[in-house]
Image 1: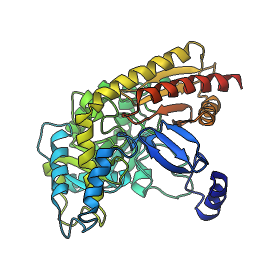
Image 2: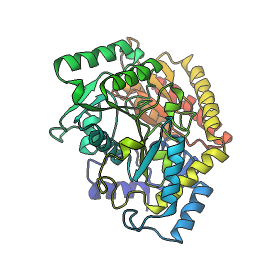
Image 3: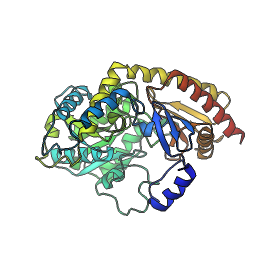
Image 4: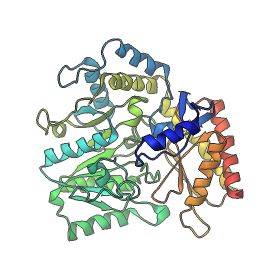
Length: 424
């Protein structure tokens, strides 16, 4: 079956709301390379949106999942628990930032992790309201999209959002929003609309993902921690996209001098297998009554096996250091491109969570050029993703295990794609 034939079947069979950005149907993949149904090879700088940080089909991950397949595939942990679940929880309790006793739960998706983090915060504080930030992305469930600070395409057509969710601007110097502006907005919110004594949680991404790969300024994180402490608010770090060595640390919050009360995780934890987690202060995680958290597939044995293997691979292969090295090489290439591309206004991001933002000559978002670059790269065999509220940011999310030769090839293709897009 060819890509074009499958594209027709997809349109006829799948709901329109499932957006698809290419007509390349994956047939097989290995590390940072994917081959489609027509035999075309793509260098993967998307990694399933930061999921296969350890590469497609990493041998140690596949070995661990295969071994679990030979034992059992499902019991529902709430019915018949299993040791690897407990082991992975113990490891996350130790590794998630924060010098305090922690406990964890496992579910299946990033949106579920966010939903459960909010449930925990509400159960612990006996409050309802939640503060989130413009440009943030927290999932497509009703609470997830209510927390998400981007209307198109996530909220369009779905009616009223969940109540008691309040958004304030996220600090971004490039677009004229300072940390002071953010906290002035919070103070205005507290004066006009929301009693801080009603706020259960404040949730943010240490590096905004869909919003444009904007790293949270250190001052912002420190002041948010102080504000949460002053008002008894639970601070939630959404590390669904930043987690598991992507930023040069196992977790992005390691780069700050304060810790969140609760951390949400997914994507890179499973190395391609569905699993998500919530880890937080033990007293908070124990606030919900037995049966209040979890789910039938939560912490599926295959995902748990993959999660334990991913942590082993990150440690044994030094992937945090490798993220720093790859990110530095990518930024160097982008800096060279920038010399002949004035539209490339900003290069940013920790580790190998790097973004390039494109603006017009008068400083406005340039989604047209950004889209052309993505398409030019795709025609050359390089898979890129865009992001940002205005769609004018290219984000780079290749596996941290990408071979040097493949990475270098990708840099050549990227350089050619930018030049071709500008010429066009």
